[in-house]
Length: 88
Image 1 (cartoon, helix red, strand yellow):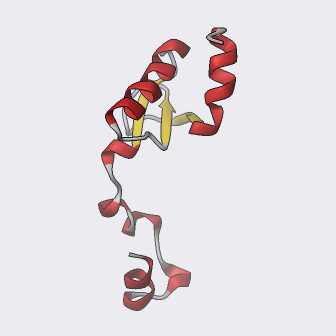
Image 2 (tube, helix red, strand yellow; image 1 turned 60 degrees about the vertical axis):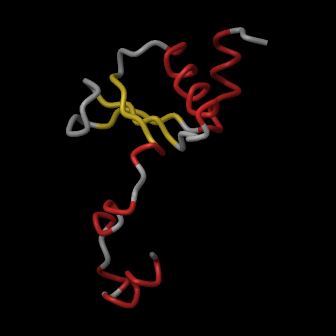
Image 3 (tube, helix red, strand yellow; image 1 turned 90 degrees about the vertical axis):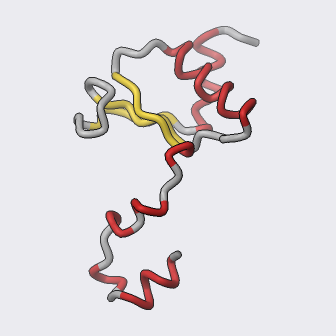
């Protein structure tokens, strides 16, 4: 993928949008800023059970892709989520 972008265009002018067709929708989710923490935790848990392994949960104002991004959860946030939920 990276090689084709470099081969087909000047890397200095390459745009992130060129990578979008290669993203896997199962790698991320988009949620509203009003979603509860337990739901976020369960999204990661469910993805691991299904073998999809969410790489990020994008948080927007209203849960729509075209809404402003207000936050981001990644797998490295899971320990803090568990702590917040007191699931130990």
